[in-house]
Image (tube, rainbow, N blue to C red):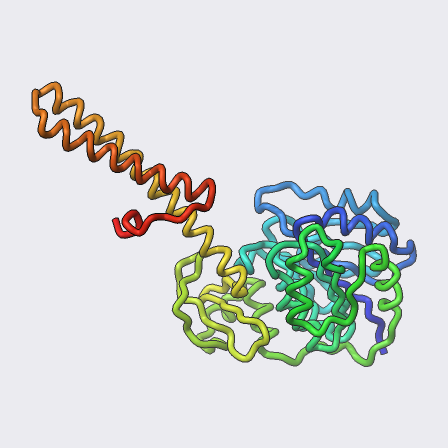
Length: 336
């Protein structure tokens, strides 16, 4: 028999405050290890361990590659690295981004489910989009417990709501009740470790670890889709036989349908900014040509270039309004 002493937590927007409240309510003698992924910018400096050290009794630190897991300790994923759990130790890897993030919640949850099965408590807190949903589903399938912050009180409700819509969640609680629930769950006895099992779970964990054998394996659990990977441009493969629609490219970038849609929207916006820049540069060039034609006494060309500059600036103004206010682009602009 073993205790449920592996607690994995994922959060994004509003996560610092949520984590402080949870950690502040945990007892000093807490016989479980906590692993935290919070979305942060790749080049940022993370002070989250210092904040959590001040918030409660348990020591917190950034996880280090190969470090042994200690009970009663909080491990935080460092910026721009996935935090993964193996049998008794942690791995810190700059593997492919998942759901547009590194660190991402799903790789942590997936690795915990793979190696610790029924001993795992997965917790999804406040955050945008749906990172953590697929990983929490893996935890649940392997016999672990799924816990979600009440979305009604979350600063960003999308992550907990997504988890509730897809996973048969065991507990939905406000932050005030989260420490007591975790303390109660952490002493529950379960049979066996639950390690091993799913070959897909193992392969996806190896991809997050940047294992080239797994990445180069041509036996992919899915079918080619019509979509291109926003990160590398390669073909995205639709993962078969899953409750949530997911995609993964040849080199390992992974997306849920929602995160893929968000990336595509970002691509559209980037294209619109580029188009506006090109139009404004074209208008500037046309004005210069009109000025030169005027110096050479070529009125026909002056009129032509001035009209071209006017047309381009009108089109650029339409794009500017679209970018700033979400107005629709007229069909003739798109066609041109």
